[in-house]
Amino acid sequence: MYEFTIGGKNVSVFPGNVPDAPVIYLNTYSNEGQQVFQAAQAAGCPLFTLVTIDNLDWNRDMAPWDSPAALKNGEPFTGGAGNHLRLLVEEILPRAEKDLIGTPAWRGIIGYSLAGLFALYAIYRTDSFSRVGSISGSLWFPGWKEYVLTHEPKRPPDCTYFSLGDRESKTRNPILRSVQQDTEEIYDFYRAIGVDAVFQLNPGNHDHHAAERTAAGIAWLLSR
Image 1: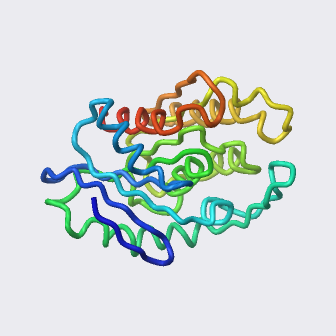
Image 2 (image 1 turned 135 degrees about the horizontal axis):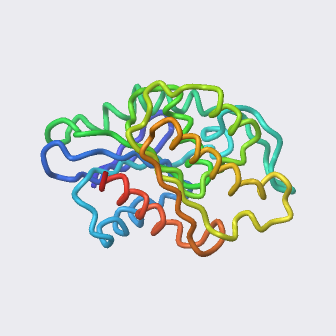
């Protein structure tokens, strides 16, 4: 594993160490990249390179546009996803891949919570990623479902993985409780336009086994 800092973000690269290994990008909330990579190895994933990005301004870097706070006493969202995506594609990506062996067979992006929303957002703004994973993705985000239904990705993804905890929609919060319905509608929409997609409902709430569930999404993307 090697690390570098760029644009104020801390980047960790866990190389696959085989020629042309696929590369998967993961924005992290609390530097959980090592845990996710180990969980992916424990799950028997084929060799791949994981690139993780940490030290994010979560409610800015992962949010596609401004929106009021979703939680009581929470912070509002200040849409900076476009700026973070430019940094990711133009600066982080080439630096992360320059010392890898060969050329990546394909490039994917995956994320948990708001980073799962960002992973989907990315394919509407760049054609750099061909496989996408949204794990407990914040697809309840105001206006997001409508955006997906009315916009075309820069490149239709080869495959897309969605998962949620089965207790995530069981909340009194009127914004968050639509998450399962919104996720299922987006999943159904992708399937209808011919995208290889899967939706998995896992036991637990939003924070239950996050690293393992992210690794399961990576395993599915690698299996296609």
